[in-house]
Amino acid sequence: MLEFLEDHAQADFGIDSESAKVLDLGAEDGDEEEVEFKVWDVLGGSFADIQATPTPSSTSPSDPTSAGWDVVLDKGTFDAISLSDEKDSQGRRICEGYGERVLQLLRVGGIFLVTSCNWTETELREWFENKTKAMEEEGARLKMAGRIAYPSFSFGGVKGQTISTLCFEKVVA
Image (cartoon, rainbow, N blue to C red; front, side, top):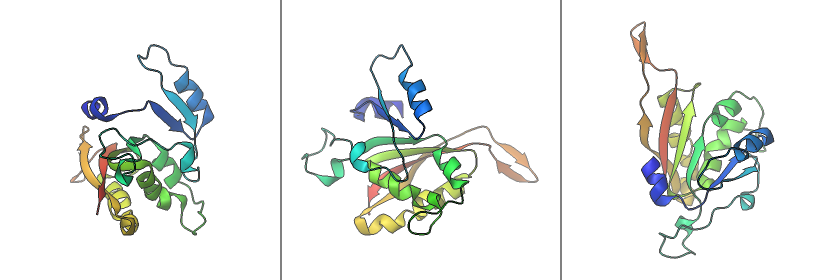
């Protein structure tokens, strides 16, 4: 992951849904590079407010596959919104549209790293590989690219872990 970021990341930019988090993150000292943080509503915010510029590795700045972020990191947002019964404008639970929002943030080849304490690996794959297939008509979907292994435990003949972290890549169908 760190090698990918060193080779591909072009902008140092972060967003969070809570202004207190942004203030805390922006106040950290000792970083070699300054990171810009903004408050942004991942479920309803305008993409124009945080749009990434095309990567220099693309063949053309007008190439639609080059626009978007290299990495989207979720360290609890999906867990939090999946506990809500709130509905979106389409009548779905708000967590049901989250994968589509992530897809719109990523460039083709970009990665989405999600860590969950509420969902198993199988369930996360269902949410982000299978339920984002609705976006395939636009030519893109999320495909599992890897996982982080954590210590596991066994209980009642079933093996499990308390944390799941999966990496998905945005691919063109």
